[in-house]
Length: 178
Length: 355
Image 1: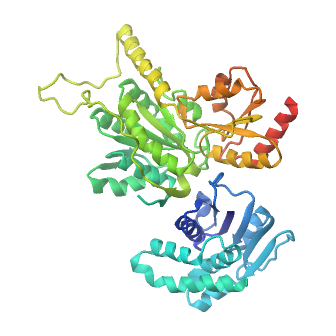
Image 2 (image 1 turned 90 degrees about the vertical axis):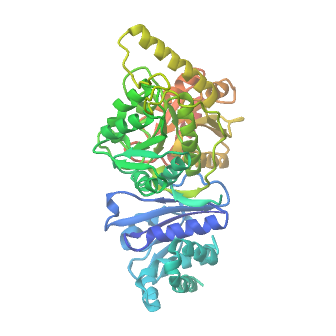
Image 3 (image 1 turned 30 degrees about the vertical axis):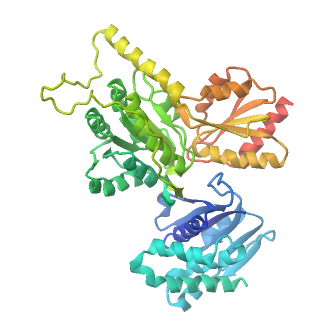
């Protein structure tokens, strides 16, 4: 199993965070992982993306050029990364912010109203976790519990109260693709 | 100790601290800023000193001073900043002082760009400063290896009284991977009897100096230094040879580029092309022997150097192969990263030519 994922959106959507959470969860499960962020002046207010690899084997190139999955949270990211999905790969689109449909028919595409779901749950910031929930459900790359364990470590004691809503977000995302 | 998920830059900084580095002098530049940031936070907590100097020139001279007292000291920068530090590095080499320098390479020349590159190879390996000197240069490919070689670098610097460089790139600095901090194999290190720790009359005065007006004296010190270099070549050369048995094409690549090449090897295998990889872990001393060995094998048709530059290490590959087999080059520059497909296409072209 080797999952090579691109996650993209704009700064502030928690793009880097869910990438790290996925990487951390992979590490908890003793898989080989890497997380590579885009860095540079384009990040401020612009687009942000990261490449994540989770694999049973050693991670070769940490750069993802032919992605097994692409998660896009805003429209510029769909335009930029749609072509990176490999044949039969997975494209997960945040339909709350992207009204466009994919032009490709050689891949599997899912549209998730991530911001609407986050708003229903009462926290706009967790649209990213809804997207991650859908992706994990479709690939089973890591267990939801591993993501929550990773989240506990990243959030620390003081923010442990945020775990339940994150679990809900992951579950709602998963429910969208079932 | 359990594995932790860390950014390359932070992992290098933590490794330095665990290796006993107490002093850090630097000046900010992307893409290595997490190193000074980590040092600024951690060093005061362990009784060390972090200082952001007024310039790179000042920072390297602070390193020179601290190294002269025998302290474990480090600086880090990226291309343009390392250029400014060259005068100081030459003095440190000329005064036989140990220190560790980290270069998280960005693209050049000039201010260039901030994306990953390997275009500082010549500067680092062929002596960016003036005079007859080399320094040990580690080129790690993973964050774990960056940690391991950084810890070892302090021992090697002390043992041979030489500056040691960790040659990374923006990708290695910015990415995250799981790492484990393990102390390197214990070396027997001599006491630093040469250090300028304050003269109180109980030993001869120690003087840190790189100026020798009498040519014969300067020649003697340089020759002695080069005798040490011979020992370093013998004892400290590190290389990874991967999948080279029966390989038709052998890729030469170091650092993060070598990881892209590993992906190429898998893709080549799928279409029936046998590709191997020789990955220098030290780029100085360069692992000549590994190249010599495979240059003599009949199965090997050609070598291919892959770099994030217009071709710099390829010259060392040519010297090592010494005309026995063709040596090709492919690479991207300016902050662009070669894709596995580009490299595989080049391999196919080379094979067509030789068949």
